[in-house]
Length: 134
Image (cartoon, rainbow, N blue to C red; front, top):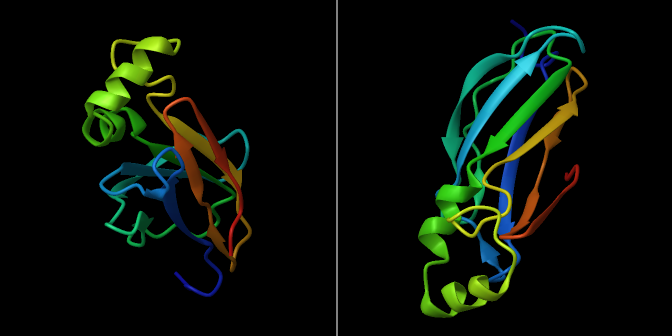
């Protein structure tokens, strides 16, 4: 497999509710060849102290679509357990007992062979945004 023809992926997460990187968020990676092909789980990693996930598995040659699955529920259960957060969440609409509206964030995107795709996630307990970075 030629690495120059293979697309690559990286990501990082910023927790906009606290203005800091989101550390220790589990991230799973899957890929497929073509829009109708089945997904192949490739493995995963977790974000480091800077919110970056630098060691995601390599994509197979011929990958056309990638899916990143972020475990946000576990992150918020650990990072946002202070008294102030608990009080604020009591006044906000709650989707589940965890108080996190989006327990996971799944991002699916197309890739181009030979290009690097950096996909940052801006995250808060009740919203998120994603974009193609550099």
